[in-house]
Image (cartoon, rainbow, N blue to C red):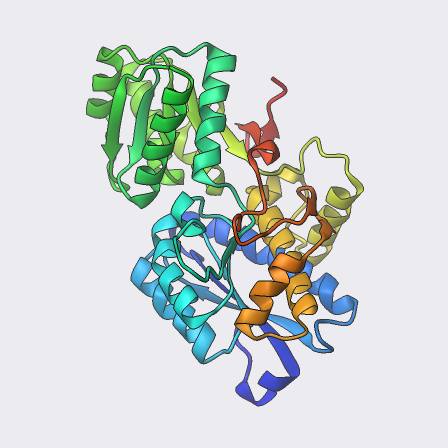
Length: 372
């Protein structure tokens, strides 16, 4: 999805760096769909600064080095007004220094690593419409406490910077509630057997598990639990929502409770219904709510695109520093996830709070909100 440079002055480009192939491709597709529907709406209303908005997509293949190369190309060659950042915390963390150095607005729509937005830069160009690990971890601990009365949960975490971010957050959340822990176990994306790590947690007395990993490794944890015959509550970050989890994990996939920022299922808001109808019209393969899994990719990206458009309109420019100030100047926006009021400030560049999370599970291929 590129545009010839001959017409570059006639349009405003939004760039996307995300995993469009591999195990997370379904999530990348959802992000593209959310951005595209929002861009259609923006263009129907006259575009931005009198110009049509177009989307330029690059596949980072979940590889941090490729993500940085893609971000540089979008900023320097394609001259995008903003880069939307995709799925993997390690990739986003690699892009953050470039975005701040280049004064390029970088808008996160999935990766939840706390340091992505809380990066310590004197001038921070990174904004996010997505979950934040530090807040998710509080919600996971609260859920384990209220739902299961967990007294000694164990942590089973992917061995990368996303796992590290959540290890820190979960330990802090457990300590704050004075709940003990059965310990922390790490595993690799390519591991096909997590029984040794899970056995250690079981022997340590774990009465619930906090899971942090993307689709395929999360499925391996579920299958390892089945092999052990260990029926223990699994409370997960949103990794399982990003692809073929039910296919990979089998029947026990439905037992995993995981966090989301949005669901079309059971959502009667006019905005949700209108966006779903727009999705069905633009993408005829979408026939039911099960076909828009993961909905968070769509919803986060849709709201992020509209908020970015508002920032550019406020700035009256596509210059990075002016757009950054434009984000801070947004008063309110009635979005898909919620109505945003002053969503960004120099002290908080995350538009969503812990109050915006819901717990869900799979029923077949559809992600359904849990009623309690």
